[in-house]
Length: 419
Ligand code: GTR
Image (cartoon, rainbow, N blue to C red; front, side, top):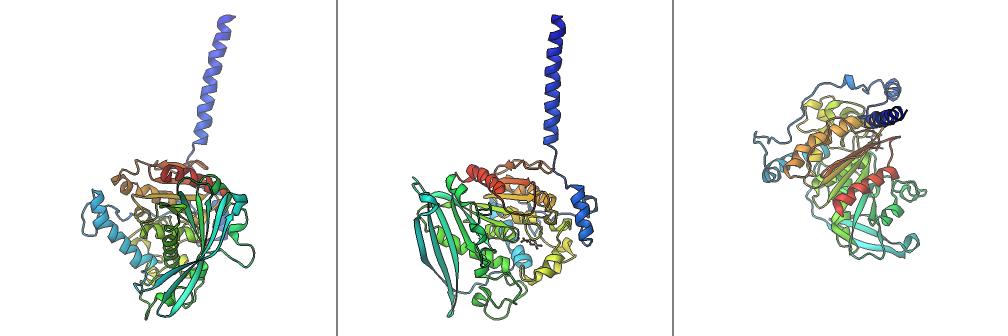
């Protein structure tokens, strides 16, 4: 009787352990696209591929071999040889080049509220004015920084092309898109800028916004597009943020959702003053590998958004393998600083798998600096962020959006990197 109950007890413990293992095994299952979503999207958009087994085979350009065939084996070789080369390839072929026209930049404090968020924060509204050869343009930056702080705090700058639609600004809608209260409570400053004021998000032949102010003469095939203009605008916001006493100047993250997620990557790649780059569901032209041709493609970007990239990018419509770069190299340009990429389960248009593979293929560059060890080759499970040194990733359940759930994981990562 006694033996029997001991046996039952041991067997019970064994079964419990086994079931925990099985359950955790299930929980740990690497993410795969839901076949129902794959089928629905394929039906709605038969011109685009959502099936993993139809992704063509491809070879990625080497991040760690220079154009002259030099193997990049030290941080110094990366910084002096390969990084400048890759940056230039992205300027020339993807985002376009900012003209080197002279301009002046001035800041004007439009308002200050030291009692914002029930006294928890100070809110400032700043106008940034750019002037060149008698032409000028202004755009606005809003900053919340926590009150009663002992030392300057890290901050997030959100690039926002949807800042104002005439109604309540999207950032002020308490919907998680720009969670000021939560970020302030966690000791972060929050900044947001109206990118559409800097350059409207439509194809106007570059007649509006910042382009006609800084473009002198005709626009070459590698002239900057709208995403490069927004990224440049993020750097101008940074020029102001580093004058702010409440903000730690070497701890500023640039963040963007979707088209602004593509922009955030370029802003962080081209301006090394950003300590952390967060790219939320940036998809094609952002974190997703172009060569996979999964969901949105280069051709589709060029035809629907002809103002986003430079004219040279058209050369790679339906010709991705000819591109001298792919998006893992854009992420690598952030090294040795930190980069976080995230995707959403239902957003197959933005190729979650291709976005993760980009990060995975950027690891060797971060390794050079001792800033990453490894990432698993297969996608992490749903809602389970993975972090390796200065690299982080998650795939969230739900639709294409920037949510509080995403921000909480961004802040967990930033706690490690910026605090
Ligand atoms: C879509 C576009 C994507 C993404 C998205 C967004 O129409 O195809 O590349 O940028 O817009 O910005 O919300």
